Length: 388
Image (tube, rainbow, N blue to C red; front, top):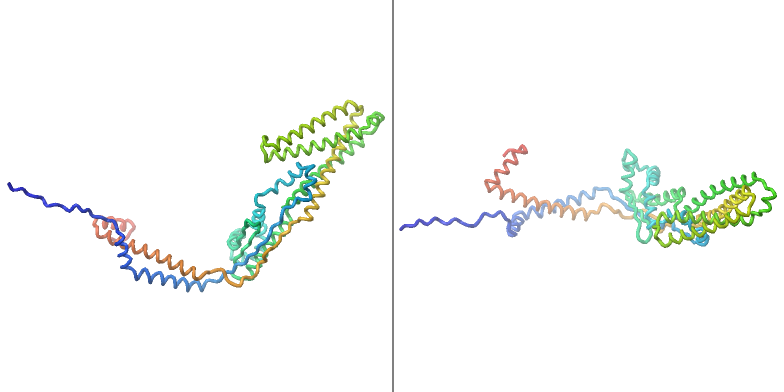
């Protein structure tokens, strides 16, 4: 028997994988392009960097106004609720961040734009675009040490220093218009309360004068008893303000809040007891009521007046003092452009781009050797309007 043996086909499949040796070979074949090309780009970038106008950076460091509460500490113990309410808005985690926001505000930026004619300097038509450009040139930051740093870039060294120092000057101006510190906020709060209480005290005094005094009113001798009631009413009012302020940032289950509510309940109970005794003993209710209202407003007025005077003293002693640590000076050396860095980055970037180009080009060459891949590439060219 003659058996026909079929020829064995090669079982080695065609592989499109590229080995490390193939990659090294591609690099070796294009070594001249991969070395001369990046070096040429780097030298060109270095030459261009000499034509870029230099940029100078000036910086100033300053310490923002510090919060001080020492003079009011003793008096706030007796009226802690009102004092806490007045200074609650000043409790920031990092007060320096507040002054950074002031420096970046439109108020300060617009003043700088007008002062240094920045619209013409930055060649901007609208002020809103000038603010954005100024934000790019001026970098404002606060450190953990509490200092605020202002860095300004400009084509002229002297202008960069003047613009950096002008930020501090404009901040001083703005702080003169705002109540920023704890003492300033307390002063505004108690000034408002004092004015309101003064109006009510005047009304109570007029009502008391119009009530007249008769024999029964003189017998009741309300001065001692009613004065005590009025002072107790003032304490109840102060405690109610304290509870209202605590409710803004404490839960009702907090120990401080519970203690404040207990004190308020005790004061109210004492007030009710004293009012009931006076109402039974007094036969001239109209006069006693008006006299008690007068003494109540008078006691409140005295409390607010003391706090207002303390706040004014603290504000005068504290003020919005900005302490400049490092005044900006005209820099002697330019900060930009960094010619060596530009040349190195241009060389590395162009080298990577050329290496990628070489690999892609070699991949396309290999793909053309396959008829199926060549047909797909031809279709892609035709779809984009290129000739095959």
